Image (cartoon, rainbow, N blue to C red; front, side):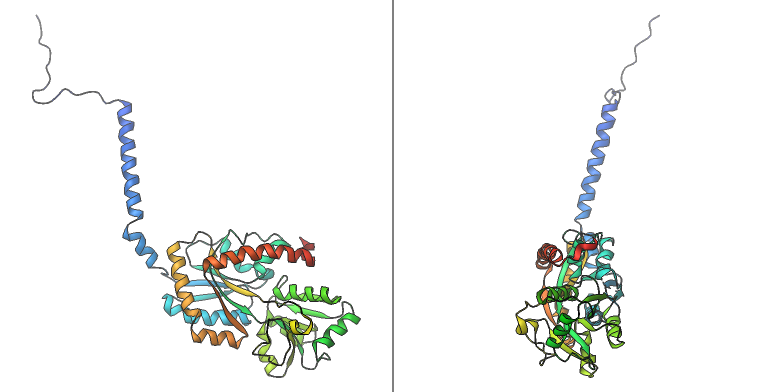
Amino acid sequence: MKFPLPRPHQGRPAGRPIGVAAIVQGVRQGCAAAALALTALAGSPTTVHAADAYPAYPVHIVVPYQAGGSTDIVIRKFAELAAPKLGQPIIIENRGGAGATLGARAIKTARPDGYMLAILPSPVFRMPHIQDMGYDPVHDFTYIMMLSGYTLGVAVPADSPYKTWADFIGYAKKHPNEVTYGTASVGSASNVMMEDIATRNGVTWRHIPYKGEADVLTAVMGGQITAYAGSTTVQPMVQAGKMRMLVTWGDQRSVQYPDTPTLKELDGTPPANAPFGIAGPKDMPPAVVAKLQAVLKQVAETDAFKQVLAQYGQELVYMDGKAYADYAARQYALEADIVRKLGLASSK
């Protein structure tokens, strides 16, 4: 007996076995579709809205000096003016010590989301040439804006025997290593300038670093050190008749000290300043950086902030993020020569 062979179901084609190659092809097609969907999502309004929502909570700014110094006071006022425009509180964190580099160290390891920023003073570009600081000033930060610069100089107690800069230098020449001066940190602009002055005048004196300017002033007034070298944090004490400004280091006489000569006019020494600015971690979102730059620039140019700067012997030295980053690269290269010339890298 013969049995009929089965025939394909009427109305549908005969099926084919599904091989491994076909399965793989299907998976690949699915992955490609998912990738396209994610790409579309990345450029969707949702991402843009997330950037627009910054900041969603308070922003922190690290000031690498003790509370109460000129930098701290100026930045606190700046934050007070900026917070309403930014839409969130700005919290100031004081981290003094380590050559004024603790702000740089903080943003080196922070998330690049715009919620941790820092003030970068001049030692940030100098200290890596003196010792390993764990950061690269050229590549590890997002530069947002340069903000201001200090009026620097030397002051002594009002009852000091040094009535003029000539008195001060003259005594130092006759008494090597007897004169002591204090600054807010090792490698600060004041420290570098004082060592340059010593080299130019053939004198030797001792540098005593502190964690902040307030500590330096306390030591000077307490008789522990001879002189204060730094910014105009000393101004209230000079106005009160407790201290005397011997010299300033600007290109022109300071408005705060019109009767005090500049070092440039006395002996031709080139002026010195100490600009500082605001930066964040590298790889910050461009939209966040743009928002910060726009808001902070607006605040920096207000009359209210300029009055604060003038009160503390500072002036607006604005640079946008790109110009500030270019400045940082140039300054970092220049500091290598300064450190080598003054022998500051002996401890490296």
